[in-house]
Amino acid sequence: MRLTSWDIAAEAVEEALRGGAVPSLERLGRLGQVGSLPLVVEAARSGEDPSRALDAHAREREGLGFASDEVLAEALALGRVLERRGDPGARTALDGAVVALVTRITAELAERARRDPLTGLLNHRAFHAAVAEEAARARRYRGKLALVLFDLDNFKALNDTEGHQEGDRVLRAVAAALTRTLRVNDRAGRLGGDEFGALLLQADTKAVHALLDRLERALPRGVATSAGAAFLSEVAGPVEQLFDLADRRLYEDKLARAA
Image 1: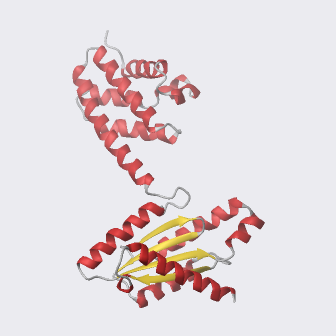
Image 2 (image 1 turned 90 degrees about the horizontal axis):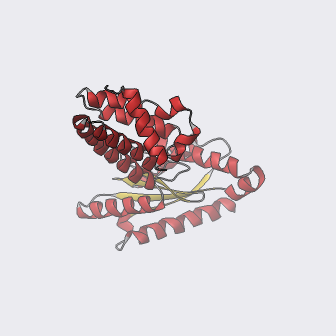
Image 3 (image 1 turned 30 degrees about the vertical axis):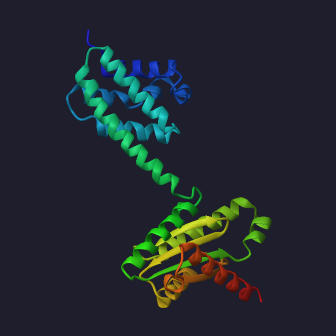
């Protein structure tokens, strides 16, 4: 008797549970444990490419809070069941889908590692790497480049009086405003705390002033920033000099605003 797709999926889920590879399954009911895995089985057994069905199932699991290794463990368990039940063709088809899934997950994890979890902007390391890469390219082809550093005025007072939840909301709003004001090829990053950076390609003083004007209009009411800009043409050494110069000018702007 040929097992149904649901039976195959249920057997794979049970195997994954017994092996302790997918502990998140324990909080789901029996129907929820199987999810859309039967559709993956149907695609693999019918000779279709099951990649789309497996990816949809994986995203469904991820939406329930499953870790990447749990999603993959479940797919691998399904492959073993298909092999054991005498369907090597379906197993081979599933293996190809698993490779595609691993590729997608790996790319997403790599991108996530470059992002600040609160704002979605580039994190400090990724932003610094982007500046270094673009500075090297600009020097090679005699291009222009500007680095602008920002931080929020009176942010500590906001955190102290309104709490960190409100502070986080403001940081997300500032990041969104900065993203909206950048040109297509420019980059933005959160460097830590309330400090942000913008990397402007082929930019001169006029482009920097235009960015600052757009950002001022885009910021939430009551939120203001201090800023310092430095141009690649002003430094001859490593990009740390560019950051140092922009940081000094940021400090000068903050002092001027406080005066």
